[in-house]
Amino acid sequence: MDIYLIYFLRVLEFLLTGYYYILIAYVLLSWVPSLHQSKFYYYIALLANPYMRIFRGILVIGMIDLTPILGFIIYQFGLSSFSEMVARIAAGS
Image (cartoon, rainbow, N blue to C red; front, side):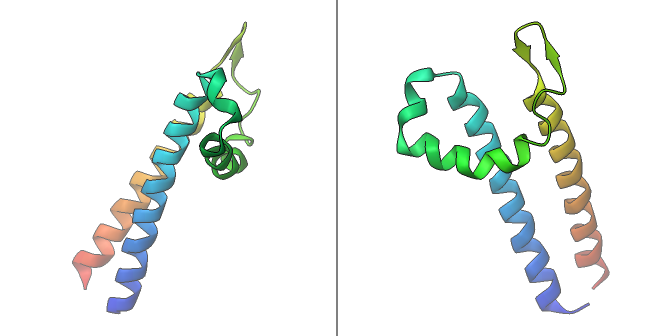
């Protein structure tokens, strides 16, 4: 297998894992209303909203929005599947 493809896939895996942690930071910071006006929260929300917006309003029980849990489960499943694929490609080379 081409070493550049493996390198590219590893970098992409690293970036996708970093995005997962951005999603976690977004949800945790959303619980603190005083942080919603900070620049840090603005940039985290700017990065996380495109993905989280897909699930918004799907899983609402009373006043509790369980959308982030659904988003995390689907993202983690996709990330682990991608990581497994990269590991198999790297092992086959």
